Length: 272
Image (cartoon, rainbow, N blue to C red; front, side):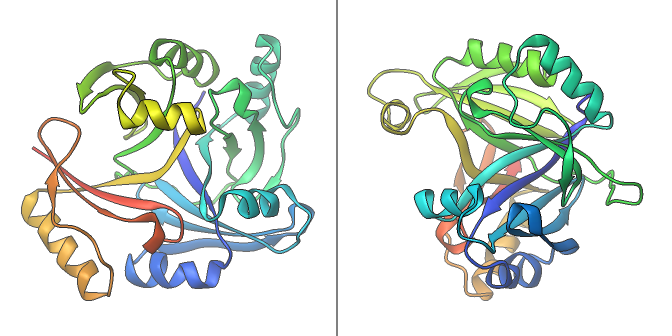
């Protein structure tokens, strides 16, 4: 059973450079830092409530992660879900005919891991992880939401239900988009699709296809807390716009652009 988002993985050229932002500026604690030789990658996990952010730095040139970085630049690589029984999950998915990259678990930074092919998940690379005993666990809220861009909201929601067991809670229409909300732990997986052929989202779907967006949204308590966070990041040399109404009704947001956060946009969100 999938019970929460474990982490989002971000591919970037230098984990050390990125740590100066994620660890030193954001204040996140490193829970793991290791070179996985067989994958040719250095991985760093940083805790954020019940979730984590994984920094992935290729240390060998001829690997999938290195090729991903070369083709797309620093950006989100995958979304990982916590799977307490990863072997049972893989057996269930194999019985359903879901296309897997890994037929059996292998060693990863987050424990025993396996990947589901993006073709099975509307363009999103999904990792399952069964963490080892003693790994980071928290009941604190981490991510507010993560986002995947899809062509057909209903079809994608059915896929995410069948593969990961996430149920569509409802939909919201805003700014030329339809947003489907799939709770997972304390985080929401948002599936967004264009509401009209002329919207920017429709153009992005036409040119780039379905994929996860390189963004995580982090909750703050209220507008005063949002203003304080914006001021804190500006004092640290980060450039971000003033808070403004978000796409979701009753929200205010301010976003650190991906270019300043090593490939992953960091949205701060206050909900009414």
